[in-house]
Image (cartoon, rainbow, N blue to C red):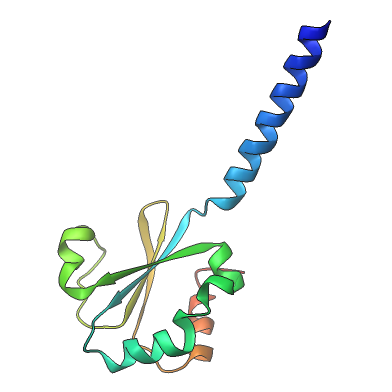
Length: 119
């Protein structure tokens, strides 16, 4: 009987831990293609970059920054060429589902992002 109780408690704890881990893992990823010489990238970092992790969007899509010069090595297969910065690629389960090119303001950025990620 003791073994059964221990087994049930162990399985319950394992399932709880697994469900928590699944909640933390997001299937979507927001990839920010940037360049050190891009004033619009700097504006995005100033307006959005430092707060993104605290937004509801971050709960559904983790942010990864990739320098434009390293793009071909890091992401060899894309739906189309990235021709400028900033470009934001939205991936779901490793597949590109959308992109946002350019940056005007945080309001327009989050509006465009909401087409792919619903917080």
